[in-house]
Length: 258
Image 1 (cartoon, rainbow, N blue to C red):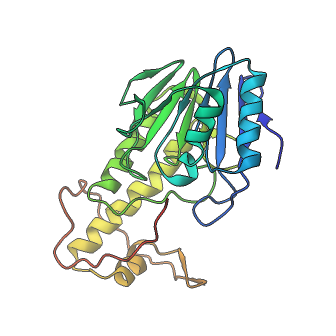
Image 2: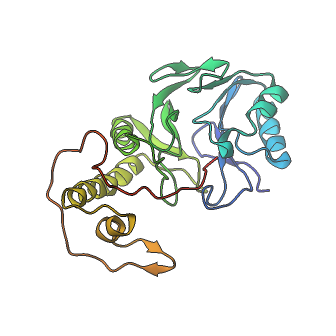
């Protein structure tokens, strides 16, 4: 596997797991921040080489303080127990089963937890001095998968708005070889909010099936390796829809994300 990548000007190292796939894209990032003590963000998958690299990086930083978990999906959390045992450190996460519970705005060593639901109900970002570990809330490549749960999209857009208000020089996402600029949350929010307005308008027109909504709202997506034709239709600007979707909306089946 690739050696840890250290971010210039920051005491942060990125360790990328060799687990590429549809949901993990080029592979999951584990971040090690600070030293004496250092903090591990998202231990990632339970791969021997990956766990060994995390332990070696923490030992080089003298000793570990805690593990910060952005959310409980397996590609972020499978190695948590193993790394915690190897380093003899506690784990902090929103999940109630975590030894140290982390909630919105809670301090976590040099980091502060920020609730960022949408991709997962228990998703947190961790903000430090000049940087933000965004997990799967803001990626460095690809698109964020939003869980098909009631209120997930609304929660995600509100989370992006919150991240835009945080003063940081860059974000450190769960994917991509390099960290993205501090304006990445804004770049993600604009098209997401635009699609939401298009979706609300399409529902108001009576469209209900996944194919109808994809054709109207996601006009440039690829499905079955065929690019959909771009539509010239534009929705009116309107308030965000509250409550459940209209009666008759078909819900597609989604594979488990971990």
